[in-house]
Amino acid sequence: MEERKIVDIAQAVLAENDRMAAALRADFDRLGVFCLNVTSSPGAGKTALLERTLSDLAGEVPIGVVVGDLATDNDAARLRGKGARVVQVTTDGYCHLEANMVRAALDALGLDGLRLLIVENVGNLVCPATHDLGEHARVVLFSVTEGEDKPLKYPTLFKTADLVLVTKIDLAEAVEFRRDEALEAVRGVAPQANVLEVSAKTGLGLERWYEWLRRRLQPER
Amino acid sequence: MDPVTPTGGPGLQWAVHEVSICAAAVRAAEAKARELGGRRIAVLRLRIGALAGVVPEAMEFAYPVVCRGTLAEGSRLEVEHVPVRCLCESCEAEFEPKAAVYACPTCGRPSAKIVSGRELELAQIELE
Image 1: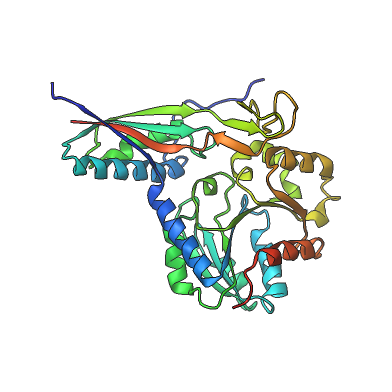
Image 2 (image 1 turned 180 degrees about the vertical axis):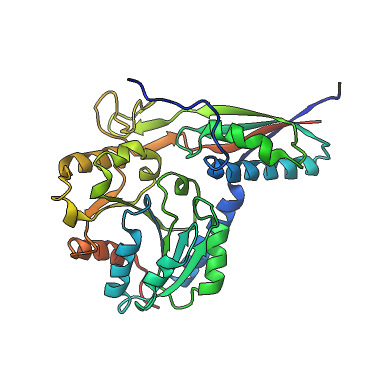
Protein backbone atom coordinates (compact mmCIF):
# COMPACT_ATOMS: atom_id res chain seq x y z
CA MET A 1 0.00 0.00 0.00
CA GLU A 2 1.15 3.47 -0.83
CA GLU A 3 2.43 5.54 2.04
CA ARG A 4 0.19 8.27 3.32
CA LYS A 5 1.30 11.62 4.54
CA ILE A 6 -0.75 13.46 7.13
CA VAL A 7 -0.72 17.23 6.57
CA ASP A 8 -2.04 19.68 9.15
CA ILE A 9 -3.63 22.71 7.53
CA ALA A 10 -5.82 24.44 10.14
CA GLN A 11 -7.16 27.22 7.95
CA ALA A 12 -10.63 28.65 7.60
CA VAL A 13 -12.56 26.99 4.78
CA LEU A 14 -13.77 30.43 3.77
CA ALA A 15 -10.32 32.00 4.00
CA GLU A 16 -10.62 33.21 0.41
CA ASN A 17 -13.91 34.96 1.15
CA ASP A 18 -12.52 36.33 4.43
CA ARG A 19 -9.51 37.82 2.64
CA MET A 20 -11.71 39.46 0.05
CA ALA A 21 -14.04 40.77 2.76
CA ALA A 22 -11.09 42.25 4.64
CA ALA A 23 -9.96 43.98 1.44
CA LEU A 24 -13.46 45.41 0.96
CA ARG A 25 -13.54 46.65 4.56
CA ALA A 26 -10.15 48.30 4.06
CA ASP A 27 -11.53 50.09 0.99
CA PHE A 28 -14.61 51.22 2.91
CA ASP A 29 -12.45 52.55 5.74
CA ARG A 30 -10.10 54.33 3.38
CA LEU A 31 -13.00 56.05 1.60
CA GLY A 32 -15.01 56.75 4.75
CA VAL A 33 -17.93 54.51 3.78
CA PHE A 34 -20.00 52.78 6.47
CA CYS A 35 -21.19 49.39 5.18
CA LEU A 36 -24.24 47.54 6.40
CA ASN A 37 -25.21 43.93 5.64
CA VAL A 38 -29.00 43.63 5.85
CA THR A 39 -30.43 40.13 6.24
CA SER A 40 -33.77 38.47 6.98
CA SER A 41 -36.06 35.73 5.81
CA PRO A 42 -37.82 36.42 2.48
CA GLY A 43 -40.66 38.88 2.90
CA ALA A 44 -39.63 40.37 6.24
CA GLY A 45 -39.59 43.80 4.63
CA LYS A 46 -35.95 44.52 3.78
CA THR A 47 -36.76 46.26 0.51
CA ALA A 48 -39.71 48.18 1.95
CA LEU A 49 -37.52 49.45 4.78
CA LEU A 50 -34.79 50.47 2.34
CA GLU A 51 -37.26 52.21 0.01
CA ARG A 52 -38.39 54.37 2.88
CA THR A 53 -34.85 54.84 4.22
CA LEU A 54 -33.57 56.04 0.85
CA SER A 55 -36.51 58.42 0.43
CA ASP A 56 -35.89 59.90 3.87
CA LEU A 57 -32.06 59.94 3.99
CA ALA A 58 -30.62 60.02 0.48
CA GLY A 59 -30.92 63.82 0.38
CA GLU A 60 -28.81 64.06 3.53
CA VAL A 61 -26.29 61.22 3.03
CA PRO A 62 -24.93 59.82 -0.26
CA ILE A 63 -26.06 56.18 -0.23
CA GLY A 64 -25.20 53.18 -2.39
CA VAL A 65 -27.20 49.96 -2.40
CA VAL A 66 -26.21 46.47 -3.51
CA VAL A 67 -29.26 44.25 -3.60
CA GLY A 68 -29.00 40.46 -3.88
CA ASP A 69 -31.70 38.08 -5.06
CA LEU A 70 -31.76 34.62 -6.60
CA ALA A 71 -33.32 36.07 -9.74
CA THR A 72 -34.96 39.25 -11.17
CA ASP A 73 -34.01 42.88 -10.64
CA ASN A 74 -37.41 43.74 -9.20
CA ASP A 75 -35.94 44.93 -5.92
CA ALA A 76 -33.41 47.23 -7.58
CA ALA A 77 -36.25 48.68 -9.65
CA ARG A 78 -38.16 49.44 -6.43
CA LEU A 79 -35.13 51.16 -4.95
CA ARG A 80 -34.19 53.29 -7.95
CA GLY A 81 -35.24 56.90 -8.35
CA LYS A 82 -34.92 57.65 -4.64
CA GLY A 83 -31.62 59.48 -4.82
CA ALA A 84 -29.27 56.54 -4.21
CA ARG A 85 -27.03 54.54 -6.53
CA VAL A 86 -28.44 51.00 -6.80
CA VAL A 87 -27.07 47.81 -8.32
CA GLN A 88 -28.73 44.40 -8.41
CA VAL A 89 -26.81 41.13 -8.00
CA THR A 90 -28.66 38.05 -9.17
CA THR A 91 -27.05 35.03 -7.57
CA ASP A 92 -28.59 32.52 -9.98
CA GLY A 93 -29.79 30.16 -7.28
CA TYR A 94 -27.10 30.91 -4.70
CA CYS A 95 -28.59 31.27 -1.24
CA HIS A 96 -26.44 34.18 0.00
CA LEU A 97 -24.07 36.89 -1.18
CA GLU A 98 -20.32 36.33 -1.03
CA ALA A 99 -17.56 38.92 -0.85
CA ASN A 100 -16.56 38.43 -4.50
CA MET A 101 -20.15 39.19 -5.59
CA VAL A 102 -20.08 42.42 -3.59
CA ARG A 103 -16.74 43.31 -5.17
CA ALA A 104 -18.16 42.73 -8.64
CA ALA A 105 -21.23 44.81 -7.78
CA LEU A 106 -19.04 47.65 -6.50
CA ASP A 107 -17.01 47.63 -9.70
CA ALA A 108 -20.30 48.54 -11.40
CA LEU A 109 -21.60 50.87 -8.67
CA GLY A 110 -18.47 52.75 -7.64
CA LEU A 111 -17.79 53.81 -4.06
CA ASP A 112 -16.72 57.36 -4.82
CA GLY A 113 -18.53 59.94 -2.77
CA LEU A 114 -20.62 57.44 -0.80
CA ARG A 115 -20.89 57.62 2.97
CA LEU A 116 -23.27 54.71 3.43
CA LEU A 117 -23.32 51.41 1.55
CA ILE A 118 -26.24 49.11 2.22
CA VAL A 119 -25.94 45.51 1.08
CA GLU A 120 -29.35 43.86 1.00
CA ASN A 121 -28.56 40.16 1.24
CA VAL A 122 -30.59 37.34 -0.30
CA GLY A 123 -33.73 36.65 1.74
CA ASN A 124 -32.63 33.72 3.87
CA LEU A 125 -32.33 33.37 7.63
CA VAL A 126 -29.64 30.67 7.56
CA CYS A 127 -27.01 30.95 4.84
CA PRO A 128 -25.95 34.64 5.02
CA ALA A 129 -24.54 33.95 8.51
CA THR A 130 -21.43 32.27 7.10
CA HIS A 131 -20.08 34.91 4.74
CA ASP A 132 -18.40 38.13 5.77
CA LEU A 133 -19.07 40.78 3.12
CA GLY A 134 -16.71 43.36 4.56
CA GLU A 135 -19.55 45.06 6.41
CA HIS A 136 -19.09 47.12 9.57
CA ALA A 137 -22.41 46.02 11.01
CA ARG A 138 -25.03 43.40 10.39
CA VAL A 139 -28.75 44.05 10.64
CA VAL A 140 -31.28 41.24 10.97
CA LEU A 141 -34.94 42.03 10.35
CA PHE A 142 -37.81 40.01 11.67
CA SER A 143 -41.40 40.92 11.07
CA VAL A 144 -44.31 40.63 13.47
CA THR A 145 -46.02 38.25 11.02
CA GLU A 146 -43.25 35.65 11.33
CA GLY A 147 -43.94 34.51 14.87
CA GLU A 148 -42.49 35.61 18.18
CA ASP A 149 -40.08 32.69 18.40
CA LYS A 150 -38.24 33.29 15.11
CA PRO A 151 -34.94 34.11 16.87
CA LEU A 152 -35.18 30.86 18.84
CA LYS A 153 -35.69 28.89 15.63
CA TYR A 154 -32.85 30.56 13.69
CA PRO A 155 -30.37 31.55 16.38
CA THR A 156 -27.21 31.35 14.25
CA LEU A 157 -27.87 34.47 12.18
CA PHE A 158 -29.40 36.42 15.07
CA LYS A 159 -26.26 35.78 17.10
CA THR A 160 -24.24 37.67 14.47
CA ALA A 161 -26.54 40.75 14.51
CA ASP A 162 -25.47 44.19 15.67
CA LEU A 163 -29.01 45.44 15.26
CA VAL A 164 -32.31 43.57 15.17
CA LEU A 165 -35.22 45.42 13.59
CA VAL A 166 -38.68 44.15 14.42
CA THR A 167 -40.55 45.20 11.29
CA LYS A 168 -44.20 45.72 10.23
CA ILE A 169 -44.96 46.83 13.78
CA ASP A 170 -48.09 48.53 12.40
CA LEU A 171 -49.54 45.02 11.93
CA ALA A 172 -48.79 43.94 15.50
CA GLU A 173 -52.32 44.25 16.75
CA ALA A 174 -53.93 42.66 13.69
CA VAL A 175 -51.75 39.54 14.01
CA GLU A 176 -51.97 39.51 17.82
CA PHE A 177 -48.21 39.88 18.08
CA ARG A 178 -47.00 39.05 21.58
CA ARG A 179 -44.42 41.80 21.87
CA ASP A 180 -42.92 40.89 25.25
CA GLU A 181 -42.38 37.32 24.17
CA ALA A 182 -40.68 38.39 20.93
CA LEU A 183 -38.40 40.92 22.63
CA GLU A 184 -37.47 38.36 25.26
CA ALA A 185 -36.56 35.90 22.47
CA VAL A 186 -34.41 38.49 20.67
CA ARG A 187 -32.65 39.64 23.83
CA GLY A 188 -32.08 36.07 24.96
CA VAL A 189 -30.66 34.84 21.66
CA ALA A 190 -28.86 38.05 20.68
CA PRO A 191 -27.90 39.92 23.85
CA GLN A 192 -25.17 41.73 21.88
CA ALA A 193 -27.65 43.42 19.54
CA ASN A 194 -29.59 46.66 19.74
CA VAL A 195 -33.30 46.14 19.12
CA LEU A 196 -35.65 48.61 17.45
CA GLU A 197 -39.29 48.29 16.42
CA VAL A 198 -40.21 49.92 13.13
CA SER A 199 -42.86 50.27 10.45
CA ALA A 200 -41.75 51.26 6.96
CA LYS A 201 -45.40 51.88 6.15
CA THR A 202 -46.41 54.31 8.90
CA GLY A 203 -42.89 55.52 9.73
CA LEU A 204 -43.18 54.44 13.35
CA GLY A 205 -39.76 54.02 14.96
CA LEU A 206 -37.85 55.02 11.83
CA GLU A 207 -36.29 58.10 13.39
CA ARG A 208 -34.50 55.83 15.91
CA TRP A 209 -33.24 53.62 13.06
CA TYR A 210 -31.92 56.70 11.26
CA GLU A 211 -30.28 57.88 14.48
CA TRP A 212 -28.62 54.46 14.85
CA LEU A 213 -27.28 54.86 11.29
CA ARG A 214 -26.16 58.48 11.66
CA ARG A 215 -24.18 57.66 14.78
CA ARG A 216 -22.11 55.17 12.76
CA LEU A 217 -21.33 57.32 9.73
CA GLN A 218 -17.88 58.75 9.21
CA PRO A 219 -17.73 62.54 9.20
CA GLU A 220 -18.25 64.13 5.79
CA ARG A 221 -15.03 64.52 3.79
CA MET B 1 -43.62 14.07 20.00
CA ASP B 2 -39.95 14.65 19.14
CA PRO B 3 -39.01 16.64 16.05
CA VAL B 4 -38.58 14.54 12.93
CA THR B 5 -35.12 14.49 11.37
CA PRO B 6 -35.30 13.39 7.75
CA THR B 7 -32.83 10.61 6.96
CA GLY B 8 -33.98 9.68 3.47
CA GLY B 9 -31.18 11.68 1.87
CA PRO B 10 -31.51 15.34 1.05
CA GLY B 11 -31.61 16.63 -2.49
CA LEU B 12 -28.72 18.63 -3.88
CA GLN B 13 -30.90 21.71 -4.02
CA TRP B 14 -31.39 21.53 -0.28
CA ALA B 15 -27.63 21.41 0.17
CA VAL B 16 -26.72 24.28 -2.20
CA HIS B 17 -25.18 26.26 0.63
CA GLU B 18 -22.98 23.35 1.65
CA VAL B 19 -22.03 22.62 -1.96
CA SER B 20 -20.37 26.02 -2.21
CA ILE B 21 -18.64 25.64 1.15
CA CYS B 22 -17.55 22.09 0.38
CA ALA B 23 -16.12 23.26 -2.92
CA ALA B 24 -14.10 25.94 -1.10
CA ALA B 25 -12.70 23.28 1.26
CA VAL B 26 -11.74 20.99 -1.62
CA ARG B 27 -10.12 23.89 -3.51
CA ALA B 28 -7.99 24.78 -0.48
CA ALA B 29 -7.06 21.11 0.07
CA GLU B 30 -6.10 20.70 -3.58
CA ALA B 31 -3.89 23.80 -3.46
CA LYS B 32 -2.05 22.35 -0.46
CA ALA B 33 -1.77 18.92 -2.08
CA ARG B 34 -0.26 20.42 -5.24
CA GLU B 35 2.14 22.53 -3.24
CA LEU B 36 3.42 19.35 -1.55
CA GLY B 37 3.46 17.30 -4.73
CA GLY B 38 0.71 14.93 -3.57
CA ARG B 39 -0.90 12.71 -6.17
CA ARG B 40 -4.21 12.14 -4.44
CA ILE B 41 -6.08 13.32 -1.38
CA ALA B 42 -7.26 10.25 0.54
CA VAL B 43 -8.90 11.88 3.54
CA LEU B 44 -10.08 15.43 4.20
CA ARG B 45 -10.81 16.47 7.78
CA LEU B 46 -13.02 19.42 8.65
CA ARG B 47 -13.86 21.00 11.99
CA ILE B 48 -17.39 22.34 12.01
CA GLY B 49 -18.77 24.34 14.90
CA ALA B 50 -22.39 24.07 15.92
CA LEU B 51 -22.71 27.81 15.14
CA ALA B 52 -20.89 27.70 11.81
CA GLY B 53 -24.13 27.92 9.85
CA VAL B 54 -23.60 24.72 7.89
CA VAL B 55 -25.30 21.36 8.23
CA PRO B 56 -22.63 18.64 8.55
CA GLU B 57 -24.94 16.01 7.00
CA ALA B 58 -25.41 18.22 3.96
CA MET B 59 -21.64 18.65 3.72
CA GLU B 60 -21.26 14.87 3.65
CA PHE B 61 -23.92 14.66 0.98
CA ALA B 62 -22.35 17.35 -1.18
CA TYR B 63 -18.80 16.12 -0.71
CA PRO B 64 -18.52 13.31 -3.31
CA VAL B 65 -20.18 15.55 -5.88
CA VAL B 66 -17.75 18.46 -5.50
CA CYS B 67 -14.78 16.04 -5.39
CA ARG B 68 -15.45 14.76 -8.90
CA GLY B 69 -12.60 15.58 -11.24
CA THR B 70 -10.36 16.88 -8.42
CA LEU B 71 -7.38 15.38 -6.56
CA ALA B 72 -9.87 14.47 -3.85
CA GLU B 73 -12.06 12.29 -6.07
CA GLY B 74 -13.02 9.15 -4.15
CA SER B 75 -11.65 10.51 -0.86
CA ARG B 76 -13.24 10.27 2.55
CA LEU B 77 -14.60 13.27 4.46
CA GLU B 78 -14.27 13.25 8.23
CA VAL B 79 -16.01 15.90 10.30
CA GLU B 80 -15.10 16.86 13.82
CA HIS B 81 -18.03 18.59 15.50
CA VAL B 82 -17.11 21.53 17.71
CA PRO B 83 -19.70 22.33 20.37
CA VAL B 84 -20.55 25.91 21.35
CA ARG B 85 -18.80 27.21 24.44
CA CYS B 86 -19.39 30.64 25.85
CA LEU B 87 -18.25 32.80 28.68
CA CYS B 88 -20.42 34.29 31.38
CA GLU B 89 -18.80 37.63 32.10
CA SER B 90 -20.51 38.01 35.45
CA CYS B 91 -19.45 34.60 36.77
CA GLU B 92 -16.20 34.54 34.75
CA ALA B 93 -16.91 30.92 33.90
CA GLU B 94 -17.15 29.04 30.61
CA PHE B 95 -20.07 26.79 29.86
CA GLU B 96 -21.64 24.76 27.08
CA PRO B 97 -25.12 26.14 26.36
CA LYS B 98 -28.02 23.74 26.05
CA ALA B 99 -30.49 25.86 24.07
CA ALA B 100 -30.70 28.83 21.66
CA VAL B 101 -30.56 31.24 24.60
CA TYR B 102 -27.07 30.86 26.03
CA ALA B 103 -28.13 31.21 29.63
CA CYS B 104 -25.41 30.84 32.24
CA PRO B 105 -26.14 27.74 34.35
CA THR B 106 -25.07 29.63 37.49
CA CYS B 107 -26.65 33.10 37.19
CA GLY B 108 -29.08 32.59 34.28
CA ARG B 109 -27.89 35.64 32.33
CA PRO B 110 -27.67 35.16 28.54
CA SER B 111 -24.10 35.29 27.24
CA ALA B 112 -22.96 37.02 24.05
CA LYS B 113 -19.32 35.98 24.48
CA ILE B 114 -18.89 32.98 22.21
CA VAL B 115 -15.56 31.27 22.83
CA SER B 116 -15.90 28.47 20.29
CA GLY B 117 -18.46 26.94 17.97
CA ARG B 118 -18.08 29.20 14.92
CA GLU B 119 -15.24 27.12 13.43
CA LEU B 120 -15.44 26.11 9.81
CA GLU B 121 -11.96 24.87 9.34
CA LEU B 122 -9.98 22.68 6.99
CA ALA B 123 -8.05 20.84 9.68
CA GLN B 124 -6.01 18.17 7.95
CA ILE B 125 -5.59 16.11 4.82
CA GLU B 126 -4.06 12.72 4.16
CA LEU B 127 -2.05 12.66 0.96
CA GLU B 128 -0.91 9.82 -1.20
